Image 1 (cartoon, helix red, strand yellow):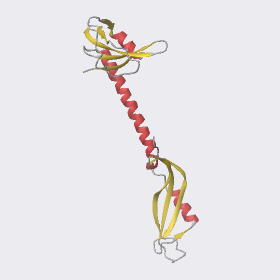
Image 2 (cartoon, one colour):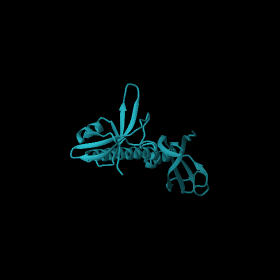
Image 3 (cartoon, helix red, strand yellow):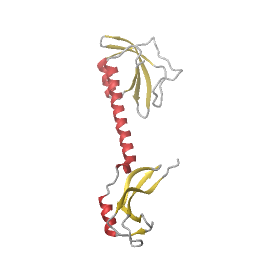
Image 4 (tube, helix red, strand yellow):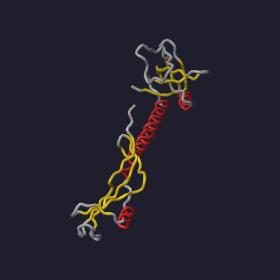
Amino acid sequence: MFIIYGQRKLRIKRYTEHNERCSHCATFDMTVSVYHGYFHLFFIPFWPISDRTSSIQCNNCGRGARIDSLQYQYERQTRKPFYLYTGLILIGSLVAWIAVANHNTQKEKRAFVLSPRAGDIYTMRHDSANTVQYYFLKVSAVKGDSVMLNHGAYMYTGFVSSPDSKDYFVEDIEYGLTKQALLQMLEEDKINGVTRH
């Protein structure tokens, strides 16, 4: 994978200064530019690095100047712009979005388990000694507190979100579970997903 990263410098503020005289042409018209270094990944700024620096240029003759007290003054008064943290803000937003989406998914799964309907398909996880297997259960009927289920024909050795096209539900064998038992299986992570069509 090709990753572009490194350090760059960006002008974060420009000021016009009329109180200092250019030592070359004697005019009082200078531009002070303040810069800040930052770390980037794929050219997206992630966080500021190093201290602020500045340069002075005469607007009349175009020559550079060095006035330490003036540069120090502008470097101190210039704040770091928030966009130098763009990468961190994007990552934080992504993490927050994933957390909210996961919370909503868990809430929806719980609601589906508490009020099952015929046709609901549960993605089940079974842990044995050294392996984890997945399979599917399909709700065939709901009778009061009892939920009747058909077992999928296949067992999967890796996580799957939907049954394989060759998989099917064994309809002549039904299993009965209570809604409370299903809820307990959800809380123990034995139910990994609920699909409702």
